[in-house]
Structure formats: C-alpha cells, structure tokens
Amino acid sequence: MLKIGVLGAGHLGKIHIKCWKEVENAELVGFYDPDADNAADVAETLGIRFFAHKEELIASCDAIDIVTPTLNHHESAMLALRAGKHVFIEKPITATLPEAQEILQYSRDHRLKVQIGHVERFNDAYLEAAKYIDNPLFIECHRLAEFNPRGTDVSVVLDLMIHDIDIVLHTVKSPVRSIHASGVAVITETPDIANARIEFENGCTANLTASRVSMKKMRRARFFQKNAYITVDYQQKEANIIRLRDYVPEDDQDLMPLILDLGNGRGKKRIFVEKPAEIHVNAIQTELSLFVQSILENRECEVSVYDGYNALEVAYQIMDKFQKIPF
Image (cartoon, rainbow, N blue to C red):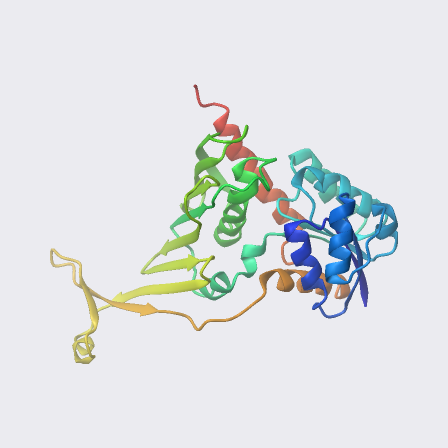
C-alpha cells in the first residue's frame, strides 16, 4: 500500500484528492496548501488531514502528487525527489525547460518514477479513437475556453495547447521537422490565443489552435489518414470513425449504402461511418492508478517524464516563434 500526499488543494487539487480515495493500493495520507483558510475548508469537507508544512507531508509519504500552479512545479518536485519520493506532476511538467531537465536527470539518476498529468491520453473518446488511428497524414486540433484567471500565470500554449501537443507527439511518433506559429496577448500579459503548424519528418502535419478568450468551450481533434477520417470530441467524450474502401457491385444490395464517386473515371468508394461503443472512464483516477501501478511493478510510467519534457520542448519552440513576429 503506497502512502500518497497531495500538494495543492485548489480546483484541480480537490478533484485529485477525491480520486485518490478510489485508487487501489494507495492510501491518501493528507495534503498541503499554502492558503490556510482553504486548507481548513478542504480538510473538513473532504475529511482529509491537512499538513501545515509540505516537508512534513513529503516525509510521511511514498509518493507525492503535485497539483500546484505551474510556476511552483519544479520547486515542489525537486523537494520530493530529493527526499526519495516518486512524483506525479500535473501538466505541464514545469514552467521552463532547464527545470524540466533537472527533474528528468535527477529522477533517472535516482531511479524514481515521475508521471506527468497529460490527462487527455485517458479521455474516453481518445481511448476509443486511438484504436483506429494509424499513420495520420494531417491532424487538426481546437481547444477553446472561456476566460478564467486560473492558469493565466503562463501562456495559453502551456495552459491549454500543451494537451494537444502531447496527444500529437504521442500519436505521430516522428521527429519534428519545422514549426510555424503565432500568438496574441488579448487580456493577460502572455499570449491568450495561439496557432501552431507542426510538420514532422514522416510527412504528417498538425495544425493546433488554442484560446482562453473564446465565447464557448471546444476540445476537438480530427485525424486524417489514408482512407479514414477520425474525430474526437474530448468535451462530449464522443468519437466518430469514417472509413473508405473500394466499391464493389455487391454494395448496391445493401440498404442505402453511402457511395462516393471519385469522378473522371477514377472509380467509387464505399463509406462506412462507425461510432465506437461508449466507455466510461474517470480519466484522472485512471492516470493516478497507472502511476501507482508503475511504482509497484517498477515499470515506465504511462506518461513519462520524457513525454512531459518533449511536450514542453515543442511548446517552447512554438512560443519562440511568437517573439520573432514584428509588431
């Protein structure tokens, strides 16, 4: 039974605390939050012990779950790692690449597990769609949100787009060849809306748009590959699979078959539209459970420290393009 401590009891921290209570082979020891009033309320509401000092909490646990603001990720993670504890860090891994590199190096040298909270990997819709995604040629992602002061301590790229960067890197599995991007600060002092075009060495191109100044929420991705088009709605947790195959005369015997005429004598294609059976997964609880399993079974984390670093590296390549735009 692993003893777990949570650093941070804000909006997401509360969700993590609730989820930890349902994770097998894990005992939630308590949490730390610098806001004493909030901590007292959480302790009473959720029935969990509040530690007045993070060092005391870390010393009482086998692993630490970091759900603090991004700017505090590095300090908290290194404090836990130097105490010999395994670490789960909410996305992004850190605010800067040197900070992420230190966490990567230290955890590797001391054989400590570090998992990054790229939770969309465990979204119901993506889990189903991923079974059909094979060598995509073009990917389009839109992640739009209404303005919320929470998370605005960093660029929209680190706040929102980082989710899609991780999904794209995980799906394409090819080195990045080039990046074109632009971003605009609308409300905060850092970009609030951004677009990035990532070209990979295997020929795939991904177009990512993220905004935290939208009038409505949207979390969607579309994957285009040879004879297939796959959509993922992370918000509605729905996936659709549209596949093509060569037309055969027997297709006309089916009731109202969907036939696509390619024109100019190029033949026809039969269209199949499939909606995968819905699964119901608590994505956060799933990623926390897998973190525990990786420790107990001494295997690589599902979303490793390397994954977290790679996503952050691409995020910084995107943000570097912003600085080169003349105003």
